[in-house]
Length: 297
Image (tube, rainbow, N blue to C red; front, side):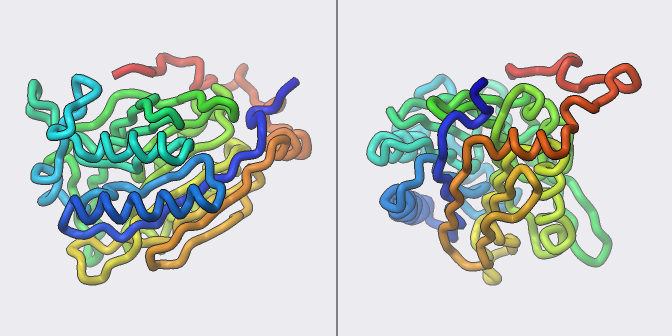
């Protein structure tokens, strides 16, 4: 029987430095994606808010309209830039996230876009869990002051490799999304995310390894580069973790691209050694993947 990952996959995480000018950000994105493609990457991941600064004060002015799809060039220059890059590189490209505006509802979302090697949009994920925290003396942030949440689990098949799951940043703190995706046959969980200097130090690596350990799948987190002159300081340290919860590769704080070779058979080897998938007690507790799960907005 074929494994969850059907053939080896070279994954690239682009830890990008985004500034105030969207056109410059998109130009920088293009340069880095082409660099990753030349290195042989077939799945290239960008960070959360890669085309704009991250912050509630920025979301409305940088937001793009994505629906109905495809949008016009004027409505979403980022959509068209990513589509063209996917075609040019013959690779899957995950546009980490961008601020999205829906004119009909007047709502804003934090939205991730996945393009296939032929340039077509194959999946969209709106951040389900909004980043609302208050750590006294450290950081207070409320995405819900501006953003609305998405309402679905996002799983997509990327031929010829298998199924992956898309989520964004704070979504990683809710293990139900990861568990559902893993039990539905995903080999990789992707989390573009902009943890900060407080939450990054506490939980970035811990969350990545925990989701991998719990589910015995690959996990990748892609952060913006750290900019201490910005109003929000991202943690950096983009990383890939293997199904045994070992960190395969980790970036530093600055702009860089990190790569990982995902191996077919690694998931099955891990699960054979520690057979969680045959030891779960669904006679004692429920299988969350068989509950009322939403796969559509």
